[in-house]
Image 1 (cartoon, one colour):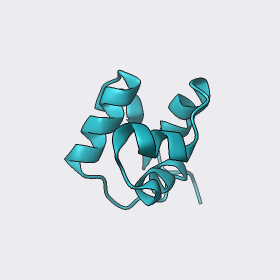
Image 2 (cartoon, one colour):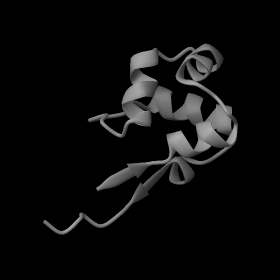
Image 3 (cartoon, one colour):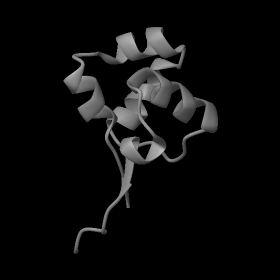
Image 4 (cartoon, one colour):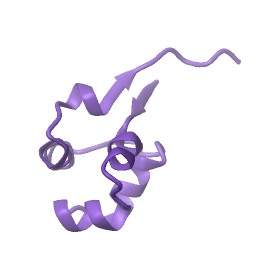
Amino acid sequence: MIKCHLSKFMGERKLRVADVARLTGLHRNTITLLYDETAARVDMETLDKLCELFGCNVGDLFEKVAEPEA
C-alpha cells in the first residue's frame, strides 16, 4: 500500500487545506483526498506542485509500506 505524507508536511508548516490550495492552485478536493489518504490516483501536475511547495521529492511525499495483516 502507498502511504501519503502530505498531512505530515502540512502539519510541520501549519498549513490548512485551503492554504495549500491557494499556494498551489490545486483543487481543495484533490488536497483533501491526499491528506485523508483516500485518493485513488494522482496526476503528475499535482505531484509537481506539491513537491515544489514543500521543497521535496516524490519519494518524500509517498512511501510504499507493507499491507496490514487481516
